[in-house]
Length: 458
Image (cartoon, rainbow, N blue to C red):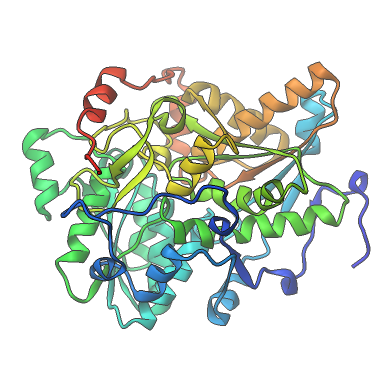
């Protein structure tokens, strides 16, 4: 295909044949590797065989891998073709509205049936579990994007699916629940009375709104206590970040067609897989010294893991059943306020993302939800796509960077990941338009209490 001219194009195409054939593992190129995991039960280094109670061997191998590239199975890549390559757009209307010399591009991951990037890993995880003879997958979901993706992936491979959905999102987003049930999933508002960890939380706080940490505890317990069931996670873990790198690899190829390369790469960040997906393939160039760029992870002010947390060993879940990882954390039993970006309400961050942030290789910022929705509406009216609340955090940062470029008179190239649409989130937009939405800050006192209970690792 001949080179395209950047001034003539809004949507930058990519051929099906250019869908990546490998996932990129940034661990191979990191100057400081993530610290190893520790067992939540013994406090000793976690052995790969200890993960077999909840993960298949293939995903355990990916989790521990330091290989730079890992082949995408043909069957997974064939399913990817249903919606990949995903489109990359130049936001020309937004540029005009902002009167900025910056060129703004966004990779749109909402074009698949589930409406978000989560399907990239859900298909892979369902495939590997099916190959291992597993009959059912148990998982958590915040806003519902991950639960939607896994329900669809399980349906494709003939697996049962049990989803523990954070209670506040279960109530806020009923159509996400309907979506999951359409594809055969059993969906429960977490915390539930179905698990010991859920019952314990409800005994302490009968009105608990839930959190991703609590929902993870329930899903892990479910998987660990049923031989035919494995656990599946939608973010945080290394293999999930790995699967999402198809996003950034495609974006690089698309930008090459118009002779562009980003000065700034931006994505929202809860657990970190969305940010990893768009940023890691570009950070490979930064780590090799061949390119200079800024990579910005954007999080909610109500759950500011990177910007206000501590870099320490912590449990991945509230009930202390998931592996202990060294990460930026607000404490495993910290419960954020019920903001309208449920997918970002996780107490910790990916060990890989955390290490990159601690090493100064990436940046992080946090925003309140009202200013995020201001940006979401501005983007929707300019570009014609209603973004998910989570993705809107990236839009807010991209707008701010474009305005800085205008003030400085700099022709920056800005790339952000529009990780999903907001058509299942219209109740959140209703709340915004009502005028009742406020910016919710995190509870410093609760964070301090939670951090005081971090595990001790020798």
